[in-house]
Image (cartoon, rainbow, N blue to C red; front, side, top):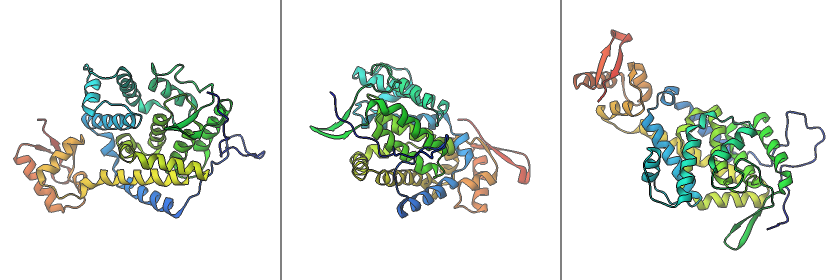
Length: 341
């Protein structure tokens, strides 16, 4: 259906733009955005690199399942986490053919998450091709028709003309690559502007969420293990309201505030574990869960910041006596190794 289209707000006349610069999409850095980016930066600073590098395959798998389930649930997919787990394990699952295909495609994409280049349009299109293979005609190619986004019987958004899509996407990628605003903000702007451009016939929502993760991972690897899409799934109405409000205001400020709030909450949940009052056995089991199989007492205390040196020593002694740990080395050079179950 032919629909008269809008022009994307980020496109303005500016003859002085340099080769590696793009027009900055319209948004304001509010006090709320500054507060959220500061909170998020502090939380990211608390997350240690070894937590990411040594995460066990089981934990990676759990996060992948949650992310795929949440992202596709937003799009109406009916498969449960248990069914997605079965598909990851190459087991047969009963369900709608389309839903199964969506999950299988998403599994392939999230298996290759680290292979995508955040600032490459070609990589962006490749991800869409994998994500929508067998679901749409010409996956990985920009749309060749005008589109409108409907909620019920009402047209809520009219996307820019399809002829403008390649240029708009090129400018958007130049913005995230060269603009000096924080990556946290730029990732949210990209998500909103990509949804506004609506470059593909289908799969734009899941691509917006996927590519925000790819952009964030470029600077903060923790986002590979942070399925904040599960929070979007839980607050789906607010997600669409934030998109609609940004459309109405012709800038992405409300959407940025919404997504930064979700990221902040997700990081808080991730860090809650370290503030819980745990037993020695629970603390040692946590190390097993995150895949930290060899560590020093100093490493141990960096994870559990709320315990004393004496408590750490008692934990490690108890671990040795109970057969959970074995010690290698002497005094301050002692390393502790978790014994496999």
